[in-house]
Each structure stands twice: as C-alpha cells, then as structure tokens.
Length: 101
Image: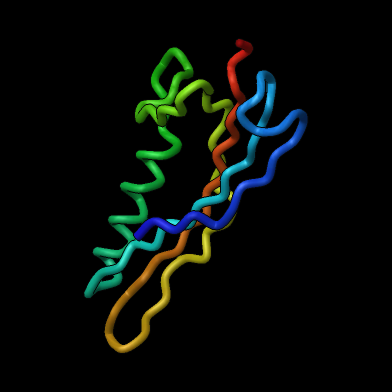
C-alpha cells in the first residue's frame, strides 16, 4: 500500500523553472506471514533504490517537466503484527527538480 505523506518545496513555486520539491511516501507491505512481509519490503527497497552500473536508477520515476534528483530511505519502522496480519513500513523521500524552460 502506497501513501503520500506530503510535499515540501524550496526555491521558486513548484512547477516554475529551478523549483525543487521533497516528496515523502510511505509503503506498507502487508502479508499473512512475517517472511512474506519482509520479502515484499525487500522488493520495494530494491525497486526504489537499486542503481545500474552507470549510476542511474533501475526503476524510472517519470515527473512531467522535471527530473528525480535523489531517492532516500528516510525511515524503516520494520515488521509489526496485529490480528495475525504482518506489516512492514518504509518511508521514502523522492527529491524532484523542474527543468529550466
């Protein structure tokens, strides 16, 4: 499950040339076993953070009129269980800048 947790901006208004934004997202992997939840969290971590040998990210994130500058694992709360359902919470920061027009 993917949850947007907010956007903070710096510089000119977001959407203007040279504007920057910090996007905070939470991913919660939910499963019936601890192993499944951890496996899914590993897959999410790899999808968001893995890089190719040239330094580019393996999974592209397309931002119309902009580019992703950086991706960071901000917080990893790890595994919890409630009512027999396991969840693994991770929070990521995606830093975006707009292209000069």
